[in-house]
Image (cartoon, rainbow, N blue to C red; front, side):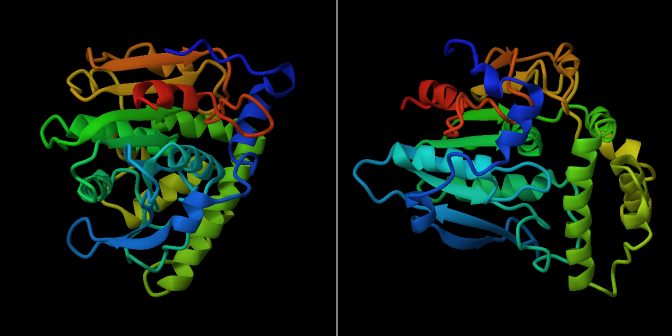
Length: 320
């Protein structure tokens, strides 16, 4: 494990780390990974279609294939995904950046709405990408909601192993969605940020499928909790948002049987993921939990140049 994360004082605060995570710091040119990227439409099962961007490595020996999972209402082009992807591409990895349904510019690809419980389609996408260069080691990294997906992928690999998977990194993962939603609602800046992005996404979905969705009244609600409750009751098979949240929570012994190398990174000052959520996790011998004093949510930036401390974890665990 690298030396603990200790950012300079001027970007040490929770607010600074959390806001800088989604800033364009460190994601501005040159863009070798993005220049090499090509759009891919995956069909993980049935009629489901998911968009991704694959940047095959073209220089020298290839270290492996890395797949990156973004956070809720982020995308394959989120700043933290681009920064991490460029770092990996620079160090010899082919990189695949996935968009979940209704993220990025994918609202028209599937009539059904995005729900975080849709693990099977994300897992199916992971399986397919792992086959791209199946003779090479495969690595997975997820951030925030993507970190939650990464944890559940690691757990699903117990019964459905991916032979080439060498390591999973989960940064600032959501463990208890109900508590995290409440934490966002209690922080006006975060509530406004996520509510604005979600409202924009719902409007785009309604425009693509006007006969299926009417969100006008839901968009008038003030909090994410209220919006989630209304959406779940109207457009899902769940009776309440509490039932829905339990469907993708990662609590108690949920990770106790994980048998792939897994690293979980979180911060004590994360304003969205209460650090107490990690205290009752029962972890397997293959899992390492790193709780840092600083980092905010999804941040861990060491400088205004955009270099992230978790790149050190990647370098150590992925043998860069």
